[in-house]
Length: 321
Image (cartoon, rainbow, N blue to C red; front, side, top):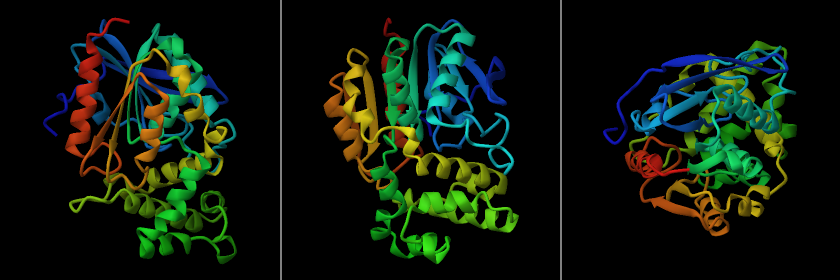
């Protein structure tokens, strides 16, 4: 994608002991004296891929990336059935972001998040508005029970055959209930074959409900059994609990973002996270700008989405805070 900045490598990296037996991997890229920005990846469980670095001008920004608990280069890996998830919640991640900010000596930073990262970014900014200079979010989601139900059940109206296979991946007695919870139980099964099938079924459905472009190609990460297990186990864990957030709280408390400029970037064809969530958020957050991208679906792979993200970070690069 020519709109992105060139590939760069970190100038510093490490692991942060955040307690509960978790070590969180982090890295910094770009200009050590630049404007601080933190990246919140999607999933939950995707890990922070190198492509995220390319949304920022490396001459202008000090770019901080980290792998959220249980995924990427952080340990323990959620793919390990013995790795407990009790200390892996939204509130733990919010505390991790603050611990990392203090570790790196950052006073305020721009927050960039996509998909699940937009939920985490909103929750962080509402909890610590004094630490956020600007916000850039794309494929906006707030991980409400309504949104989880939409993806795991209502999307069957759009992809009926594929959804039927997804539903039938759980025992018949559980097919009319909470599918995220049913898959979470299968992903903790003692039998490795049961766990592996559940991870494959879950990730196959994940690739379906973002596939609205005619040239869509499957996400190559889902071809990796280890990634599938990490991703599926964390997504189902977070979704079955609706991210441990009160229903609708991120929209209701958007007023806490007053004075923080933001850009919300969303594809008009995003049926995974329908545009009404981003639109309603923009109505509750007067300092935000909503950018709807015609022809784009979910995620940052569409060139117009990536261009809009870069345009937003460029816009804020020289803004004094």
